[in-house]
Length: 310
Image (cartoon, one colour):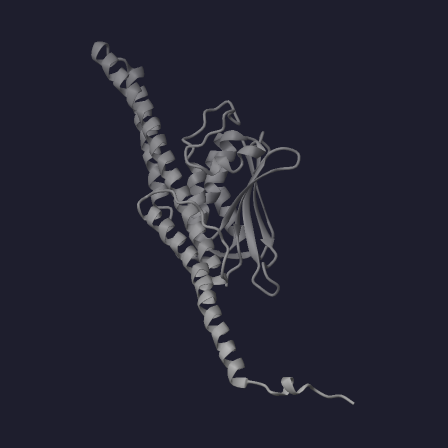
């Protein structure tokens, strides 16, 4: 036989309810304080970091922890802060490079003018002309960087026909470099892109190949599989050479403005170090990706990847 003690049957519901309410009233403020601090601290860090960024300072990156929304917000802020840092570094490098590369021909021009005042010579006049041309090229490349984000209307075109047209346009430069240019692309490969911007990228790649790796050069167009199953296919367009290539630890650095390799890829002098920076600007403006890769057997492959359209 099972039974209960009388004392256990004399329940006091009002007292139990009062105790539960008392415990709840104690826990609710503690829980609210904990939640508020969990939210307020990341918001306060974000506010402080945003204030530093607004003053032009370089803020510390935020920890991407806490509630999902705040962690996502911190991730976006960190991405923005890194972009601002890269832009600031690029601007500083750009201004330093401009001052250096303009100062050299200006110094030569001043010396030539002083010598011309003493004894006019045709060679000095030719040197002045070359220096003016050099300064004009530098200013032109800087203007190309400034115009790099200008939007151009995308068009759909046959890639193999377009590559053959670029090869014809560059025919004289190829012959002057003593090189041989071939086109490799499957028929029927259509891409949608701004043709002028793509031409500036490919012409820059080709100019580098002819300058640093005269010899056999290939213009290549390849189809890429869709990024997602059932999605549109992409393509990549590249210039492949058989020169000495670029050291693996320099493949990313050469994309920065005014960056030059310590050891030239040829005996000829290089340019200003702005060509690949212009390429990077154009690629970013169109959502493309630029890749420099060492080729098996020697040489360099410079690719621009065009993802499939929507």
